[in-house]
Amino acid sequence: MDLSNINFLAVIVGAIASFAFGSLWYSPLLFIKAWQEGVGISDEDFKNSNMVKTFGGSLVMMIIMSLGMAILLRGHEAADINWQVGLMHGLYVGLMFVATGAAINILYQNRSLKLWLIDAGYQVIILMIMGAIIGAWA
Image (cartoon, rainbow, N blue to C red; front, side, top):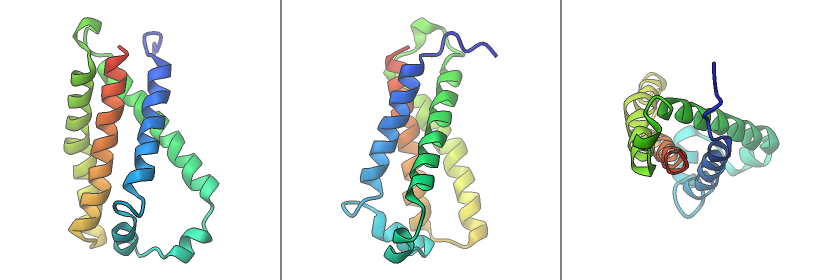
């Protein structure tokens, strides 16, 4: 696979920006309490978890996701790619693949609509962030 026309700086920045957005999305300012309730994780569970593994693994997954967005956008002519095209690709992938896949899991796990909206909403938004950043730097 030829990755020579991938802007790896944009991939990394897209992943880091998405990771940073997650610190707001899953914070006391927004959805952490509702999310904890939805998945059944207490504050004590957080204190006892391996945060290096959780956050480090999440960042690695976001880099892979951002690289995937760059590969997807590479299918267009370079002159046709901009931040809006990237944003829309993030929206389409987020809604039509990620959010629907998450909905299937939520259904089988008998979890709440609220939990799905929190998690799927986050995934859609970070894909849009990644797409916009990669598209802007194309």
